[in-house]
Image (cartoon, rainbow, N blue to C red):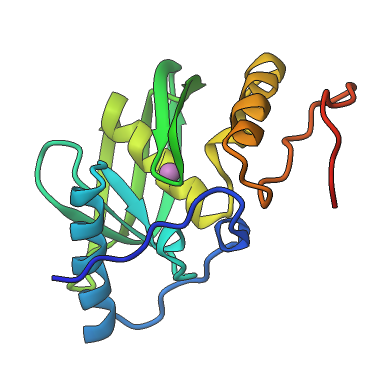
Length: 180
Ligand code: NI
């Protein structure tokens, strides 16, 4: 089973809003198998198609209850609050404490084209919200508060990836020069 390269922050493909899947083809099924092996070897518990450069609304996951594929997912309801240290395979080595809804109701379609619906809580709910973000071109760093952004900027610039744009900090100039 092949694996795909995981795109990392700075790659513009991570910022594109993915489009609905209109047909579940053999190619699509094969892609999800590859994504699962990519996810397991990373290792991670979730991987969105956008993270392997495919602009389709689907993600794979395994938060401890076996592999799953969710196509055209949609969050129908969210409730509660939960703080959890969240990381992302596209932002290697970094993680931040984030507050998000604790429970969500998410619907979508599985590989057989069957409608599925989950009432997810805590880790499962967090994972789904994180992957949903990827499908909309949103990254973990977009949720950081000002202090977390300042720290993140130091680290992201420190790894010498010149393609990483500094994260905008509201109402404050950044402490390093922005080359363009
Ligand atoms: Ni991620």
